[in-house]
Length: 390
Image (tube, rainbow, N blue to C red; front, side, top):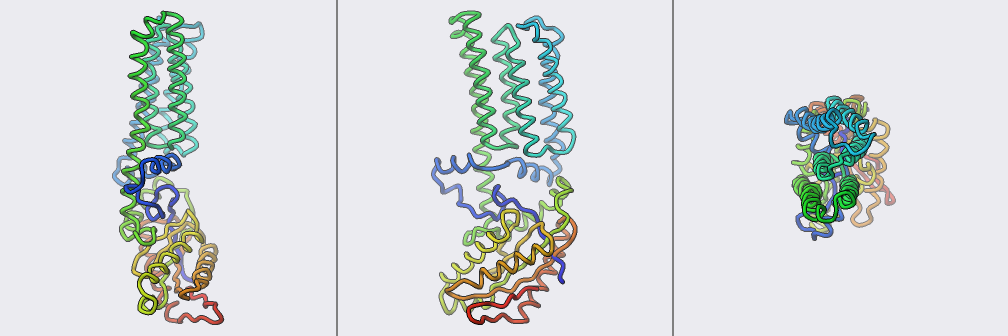
């Protein structure tokens, strides 16, 4: 049995090779809808920074935001001359603790998606509570700027839905502060000082979703250049990009997966298909092969087109599962009615996490296995194709 190796991919989340429409050609409203449903933006940025050695610097910047918040709350807890309630000093000390814990957390392993959402929720509560403790409501409104700092983290590392909730919390705290200002100091102070200050703070906070959207459009357009325009799967450049991120990903996620596999798929006698049925039919065959591979192997596999009629599947799955998917894909492809085709497949697997060097080794082994399978020939009998898998 040949060795097999699979690389982890995240096609549903803007990963190279995912079938998608080029965002540069989509109407703005469609773009906004697609952006609103997009997933974790942080993974792409983390991997980008890790490959360039910037990962620790990025985490330190996030930690610094927590320390600044802790310092501001500490000064208010110690001085306390403008605190509005008897419990305000306790709230400030809690905010100090939250800021310090936030900073310490970023010094450890990068938080996962759910943990990051939890950190944002705790941060929102702490910032909102601290802002409401000032008897000088203008000072409290100035504290809204900490929501903007937290919003930068959300814009870079989380989803539009989390950004929307964060912005709603910011707006709610600001409205409460304005109502308290009007009740305690009058409408004149509200209109003359409170509203201009609040408007400035809210404009900064509301600008962050715009930044997040622009960042998403730029990154997604960059991802489109990594896709094969005919089939929508990764092109050679996309596969090279995936290979370049493997070592960085294995460092960032050392516990992900203990088995991986690579499968090469070659359409048998594809030149005959083009010569007999025409190039449009040949293009349709390639598109259907890519669609079958994407459907059978699922969103956690990366599908790429490495030649005119040759595809590669990279996934973190064990040998048995990988071969079962290969057989299912071969059967589905052989069921194409017009024109009938078969494929030859070579598989290589390894019981260890995927790295760039292992990827190269498994690609070579899968290539040799595919040509052994092709050498056995592929026949069709009664509408069924032999499973030409090695």
